[in-house]
Length: 81
Image 1 (cartoon, helix red, strand yellow):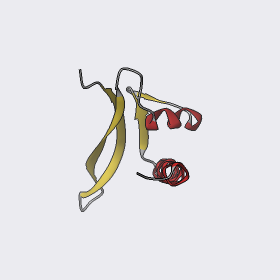
Image 2 (cartoon, helix red, strand yellow):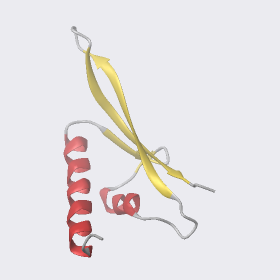
Image 3 (spheres, one colour):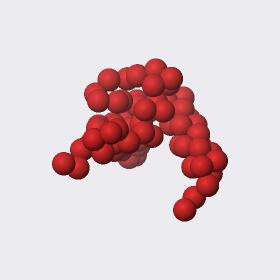
Image 4 (tube, helix red, strand yellow):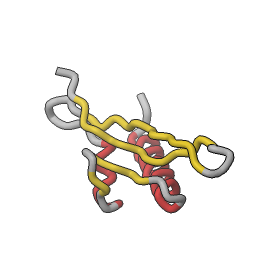
C-alpha cells in the first residue's frame, strides 16, 4: 500500500498539470462548467456512494495544417452502482 504522503504528492502534481493545461488554453470542465482552481481537488475524491470523477480528453484540429490539439478536459462524476 502507498504511503499517504506519496498519494498527496501525486495528487498535487496532477492539479499542477491541469493548471499548466489551462494556462495553455485548454478548458477544464467539471460537470460541464469551468470551475475555479480551488474546486479542482474535488476531482481527486471518492464520494460515500463510491462515485468519482473521470476525465475525457477532447481534441480538435486547428491551424492550416489541421494539427490535432487538446481543446478540453471534461470531468464527469461516475457512479458504479
